[in-house]
Length: 146
Image (cartoon, rainbow, N blue to C red; front, side):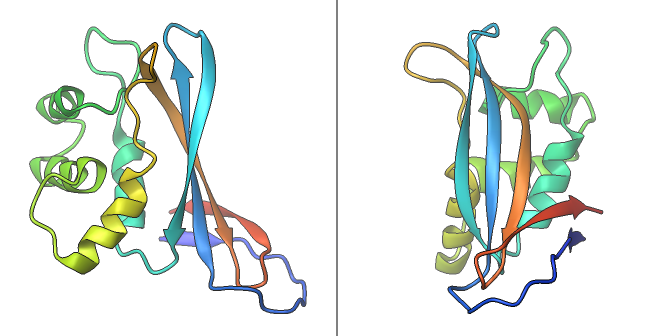
């Protein structure tokens, strides 16, 4: 369950609420950092499950970091960090690999948009995410995954 920590402020309604999902990455062997921010519909049915699965990922044997690549995701499953169903779900949501309805495609695209494995000059290691809820008044709120 995603809990929204709301501030009590009265403002004029601006737009539909949404989540701002920020993926944090380390470039290469600590050559720097980068991030990708994506806007996620507040009604995205995949978001909570997606983040709970990502939270389970730890570096696989012989590696020091998490990389969002097909082979690495398979290693996470083979090492028992995630189940076959969770692996299939990540393939669908991260890499749009699987059969999707048009509605699912829109929701999946929101999540996969921030997935990166490399830049033009080096590989990227996933270092976590930050999820912020932006309400209809444009006020940003911290979130917690329960």
